[in-house]
Image (cartoon, rainbow, N blue to C red; front, side):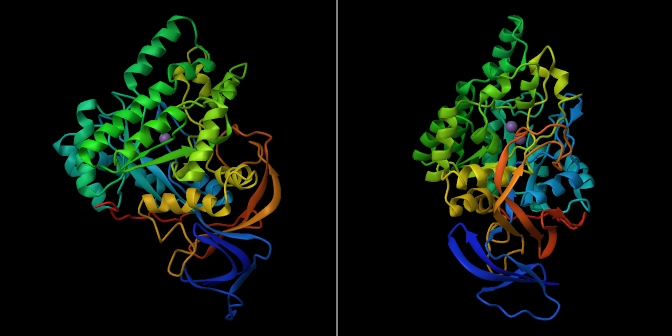
Length: 460
Ligand code: MN
Ligand code: MN
């Protein structure tokens, strides 16, 4: 199986060149001008198009339980949506709750994913409790190629760690060379604010923001920085939304904390007025931490340009507006949080980032592909276009205009957070290890071809 992508403008995080890319046996084997076309080679003409490395979404929930319901994608629907939008590898979260066992939960996730995905994937392991039994399971988890531990400072009693467990988990992560993506919000401050708001009759989705204002997030980041400083652990602040939280991460970094920062596409593009839409429509935009202000969006874009914000993910969490988000009518604390996004992260970031001169092409590739791959041990297999890398490629038409809508999207969810938005730039052809998965914008991939990618520890 050989594939030649001819005459596109190849963009990596390091630069650009017009050249051909030749792929054999799932890998990139040659890059150069006017490469020969051996018989039997599939040829894709990429003249006038960009050729990007396959995009990596480091924060995706295919399955996520919440208060008796769960997100609606399967590995089939999520991987198809990912590929249509140019994402060729994503990282899901194995999510044992406090009374569940990590290894058992890993088997549950494997049963959901193995042999079902059209694109490659891997997992973060959520650590929701810590004792000797969990520690030995986590060592086994790392041996099986899952080299990132997700922790929550919020959601205590369900998936959140107790304060006393935080440093032991970070010490183990440091010992094993494992990076620690962390949900940073102060649980007690949220509880208190939720109680006050509900008692005052402030029950609509617009009040969710006021239960988790910036100080709640910044307090969580500050605590994480202090614990990371004491333990030497490599930490990664997920879904950073605001100036206050960013400032705490930067203060930590200046003290020598090994910290990287993620934001999500919705926090760059949507502000809290969306969650204030009337008639419960705001519930579509309830997520934690919440959508913030326009000034926060500007700060996040600046952080991305300057390398202080490292990645753009989705926190993809598809729950239906009808029947799921509606569980929170009359009590915003019961709205399943999250927003679907896996399909449109790349076109949105290109259109509003590169297209509006907020990012260079190289920066766009770095924050949506190369850096997620590097931080989570997938690089250089993923995240770049180089000889020996997996032939995960996106031939991208910078001129195609597309209007986003739940009527046409592939995600298994009944609304689109960007309904009616037009984006310029769209994936035309997408490959997974040298095989076409999207051709002329249509899905032509193969369910089950996507593999679990075992990773090595990267920060020993
Ligand atoms: Mn979270
Ligand atoms: Mn999440």
